[in-house]
Length: 348
Image (cartoon, rainbow, N blue to C red; front, side):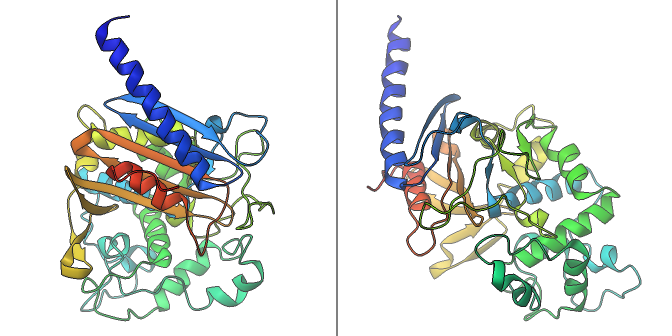
């Protein structure tokens, strides 16, 4: 073994120890931490539940709201290709007969959570309450999302305030489908998943041989596979950790990638918020300052699973963390993963 190879082996073993500590700290039936550093991957899986028939690192996990980063990349790609500008009023696609008005909600407003829309439509909650811990989105289809958007009045002038909205990104997905004349699944697959080589990423359940099984907050009760209804653009993606690492590695090294321009675009800051405007948002990612430059990240959760995706360009590091437990009041996955990515360490 050469000196370089020996040093790399020591580094990988140290990474494995750190990731194993992180897996234990999360305390969920199934947990996987996957690290890419300078192109070398380290994956550690475990959990408090019995090992599934398929190795945990080969299962697809529901990533919830982290799916929004795929939608943002899709929009950036459509803009890069000249098919859209991002400044189009969303209603132009969802109701072409409607005049745009003086301050229309644009496609970019929807992906950046500045459209003035609430987190969910007002009429979403009555039908969702009885299935809130299982599949609250299942009975709210695409046409209801579109109708709700077209009758919604922004609570403030679009582009002036930030308010996180699953509703807005879901509406964006339907507008992009109309703009590109393709169903959502077909559009995202053709424009993002296939160019990036993400063959183990899906937008709907694939069955027990492919998908991880979620658990409620107690870590015991199983939850059904996610049925996202009309909110696909806001939360439909499920993927293996290897595909998710490949996705993040494309962000770290976009050169030569067919989506290079769009990947660079989603790194660009577009708004600031928080105390002293310290926290920056790009088209798709949360961006925080760290010791060696900015880190980019997004987390997500479904009724029974959680995920964290992040990358740190200055250290050529990407991190994926997934678990089959929905933490609610005391989240463990996100702070552990964020600490590892930024170098703050993994809390126990």
